[in-house]
Amino acid sequence: MSFFKVEHLTMKFGGLVAVSDFSLTAKEGDLIGLIGPNGAGKTTAFNMITGRLLPTEGKIYFRGKDITGTQSHIINAGGIARTFQNIRLFNDLTVLENAMIGYHGRLRSSFWEAIFRLPRYKSEEKKMRSMARELLAEVQLDNVANEKAGTLAYGQQRKLEIARALATNPRLLLLDEPVAGMNPRETGNMMDFINSIREAYALAIILIEHDMRFVMGLCEHLIVLDHGVTIATGNPAEIQNNPQVIEAYLGEPEGA
Ligand SMILES: Nc1ncnc2c1ncn2[C@@H]1O[C@H](COP(=O)(O)OP(=O)(O)OP(=O)(O)O)[C@@H](O)[C@H]1O
Ligand SMILES: [Mg+2]
Image (cartoon, rainbow, N blue to C red):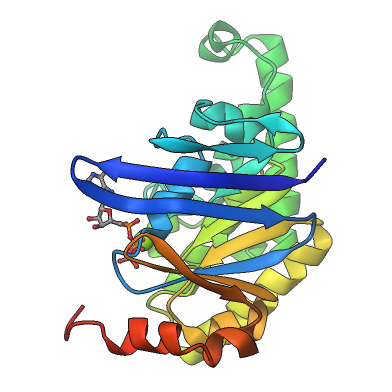
């Protein structure tokens, strides 16, 4: 039984084939990079894997189960978490409250127990709060636990988003451009951070990123998409020397 397997995924939007015949296999603990020029279909691949888009064709298997077409919150509860290309935090909630949201999918209380704050919910909430505090300490955000998320530095917001994903107890974490907009120092910190959570949480990670130094420094295996098509797979050295990959990047229109 393979840990994670995607077979022949295709996503069509009307006449546009955003992703074509995309396949991928990951073992537990793998760190895989998904790269390619703008509009290559990278985020679309994540959206299919996480149940936000129903693939036009193809299958997704996770820990021996076919999860194709499963609702995204069920996929998340089953062990796949993600972050988004544009940070999605509740800016007016505190860092702690944002982290606690990650635990909500793991609550056993019913909706009504939560609404009326019945005893089971109250005790679960207390537990959630203490788990969120622990998590924030682990990712070194405990010093800002009571700040509004929107006031954090950019790098810390990205970290908080990852922390919230970790709160859902994933085995597979998908990161969509975790260092976009970061300066070199923040990027270096994020690289260390990803390595540390990979180890601490025994995660497999698939990440999308345009920053080549970051990708090449972190990932063991790379998949290159261009116009929805997988044009290369291999280790960083193989990818860097692949003429088709170089062409895909250099052939990009100006300003893209
Ligand atoms: N919901 C949608 N409806 C229609 N077209 C879409 C939709 N989502 C994505 N697309 C199109 O599919 C193609 C792939 O988009 P996608 O966002 O997956 O690219 P990407 O590789 O993540 O690019 P970037 O690096 O710029 O984030 C693009 O042409 C995009 O406009
Ligand atoms: Mg994208």
